[in-house]
Amino acid sequence: MTNPLAPGSLNGKRALVTGSSRGIGADTVTMLAEAGARVVINFRNKEKRAQQLADKIAAAGGEAIVVGADLTDADSVASMVAAIREAYEGLDILVMNASGGMESGMAEDYAMQLNRDAQVALLDAVVPILAPGARVVFVTSHQAHFIHTVETMPEYVPVALSKRAGEDALRAKIPELAEKGIEFVVVSGDMIEGTITATLLERANPGAIGARKEAAGRLYNVNEFAAEVAAAAVEPVPENNTRYVGDVSDFVGASTGE
Ligand SMILES: NC(=O)c1ccc[n+]([C@@H]2O[C@H](COP(=O)([O-])OP(=O)(O)OC[C@H]3O[C@@H](n4cnc5c(N)ncnc54)[C@H](OP(=O)(O)O)[C@@H]3O)[C@@H](O)[C@H]2O)c1
Image 1: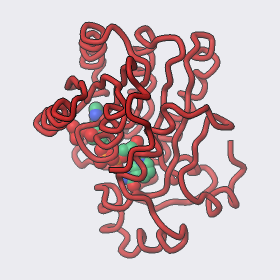
Image 2: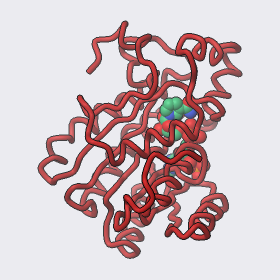
Image 3: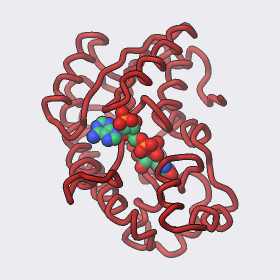
């Protein structure tokens, strides 16, 4: 695993990565822990995987706690914040990675509930335990970030609209966060090879991921994208509070941007 963060560079820091039992979240939380942060692994369903990851981090000399929470459930989020306060007293890094909306059997507006409403409620719940100088990172896709100017695959549209709505609602809080000395960064990346989302979209649109790969030159894998998210948690806040990962020329050419 290629970690952009130097060992020890996050000594004394505390970080929560939502949805970190697997995938991009798991690699991100591992990188933050390797750099010395005490981390919180949040899961919704995958408790066993979350605990295995915490054990791996501990075996490598790091420190991790595992806290279950469904972000769409306010009580569950409140319990998670209380558990973090008790274990670490506060947080210096919040990575808003958890996402969804393509699951079957959910309410029609579930994508909006999770990707907009729950993200805003999470931030509101976590702000009281964020230390001055803390960093909040919201993870999204180019397909969502640019949804108002660039078309995407039909199956992804509800997710894209809800993630962009979530991003906008969080961006509206930048002044309020700045007053508290809290920084905010959006990380936007193209489809990531090897993820469930990419697999589902490829199944519904055979050839779509290959076409994106060809258009973009290459697609990032989970570990490479996680490295960008981890770097976004510590590097200076980019212009427009936005870190674009990889080539965005296909998207920006058709867009007015922020
Ligand atoms: N996949 C891509 O191609 C791609 C491209 C660009 C950006 N991104 C962004 O990268 C981030 C991670 O994507 P991913 O593909 O790794 O996602 P994923 O495989 O769908 O994983 C989602 C994570 O979110 C958690 N989660 C889902 N619903 C939740 C809820 N209600 N409460 C708490 N946690 C919940 C899941 O936890 P459990 O496993 O415990 O259920 C899981 O850990 C997302 O923000 C996504 O938009 C992804």
